[in-house]
Length: 200
Ligand code: PRP
Image 1 (cartoon, helix red, strand yellow):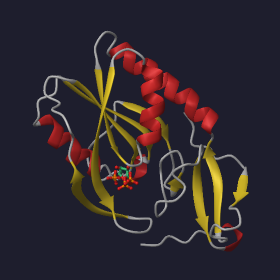
Image 2 (tube, protein in one colour; image 1 turned 90 degrees about the horizontal axis):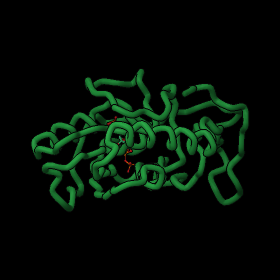
Image 3 (spheres, helix red, strand yellow; image 1 turned 90 degrees about the vertical axis):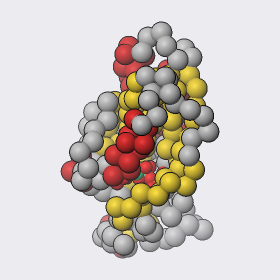
């Protein structure tokens, strides 16, 4: 696990917004290797039982898809949608339910799958909600953890990478719905000469 950024820099292509610069923070190769290790850790803890993955839309979709393939054994999926961010790059602290789960989690071994743990407010809300529904086990896997941003007292059981407090996109994470399809996790910088503007 490392938070060291690579020096690789890629200007966005014509047709995209010229002033945005992406810097690869975690390459897809490193993500793939780490997801494989996480799946092994999860299967070590749940060797013989079905694991019910609960993806938190939309950022977790790529991570969940890769994690599910690495897990093997009996795996099922469900998805929930909540909003925790306002527009722009900072969290509002509000959590709102947009779409609930389709099926009951009572008696199941549930693994909540998140792309990023930031303030922790979303996860705190979800854990409280899910605990009331009496799962057999309730665990959390996050790909990225911005530990220094934490407000709520929550932590993941399985963490991919601890990252610094920079705005990241790619591998499911977006900036205004763009960049989710990038294979790497990248830092977005706005403005000339790498100067970063943070917009509320
Ligand atoms: C992101 C992420 C988590 C949440 C974490 O979702 O997927 O759900 O924010 O932030 P927190 O720890 O500060 O609560 P977002 O609201 O950006 O939605 P998205 O996954 O659809 O992009």
